[in-house]
Amino acid sequence: MPVCVLTVSQTSINLGESVALSWGFSNDVTSISIDNGVGVKTSRSYMFVTPNVSTEYAGTVSNSDGSATCSTNVIVTVPPPPPPTAPICTLSAGPSALAFGGGFSTLSWSVVDGTSASIDNGVGGVLPVGSGFTLVSVVTTTNYTMTVSGPGGQTTCSTGVIVAP
Image (cartoon, rainbow, N blue to C red):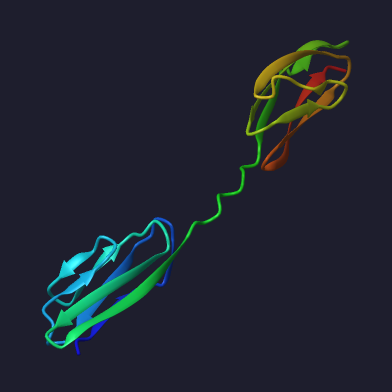
């Protein structure tokens, strides 16, 4: 009876990875037919395959004494998506220094990967979240902190306006 062997270098891979599929057969056989697009092979060898789903490779050999089959499996795992990225923000004031008595300053912001944002010291929620500006009245030196939330978590950014004594 003829004999065939099919093996893979790894039985479990992530989607997009390759494995070496090796085959062999007894000396009384001249070729092996392997399914799933591999085809007929006339010598003992290997090739790299990159299955998109878990796949069983089956081979068939035959001679005057009959036929034989062999198989091997590759389990393909789809890795989970990466976690969402944390939001990033910048907050600036212009002007950032005012004369004695204070005045007005413009707070400007830029946000990436945020879904909501607010600035403390009476400013509150800001829209649009992605970027914008608001005018604030400043009487004494004041630090402003923006808190941004998004699918990847929460972050803060700060700026200050100095009022001369």
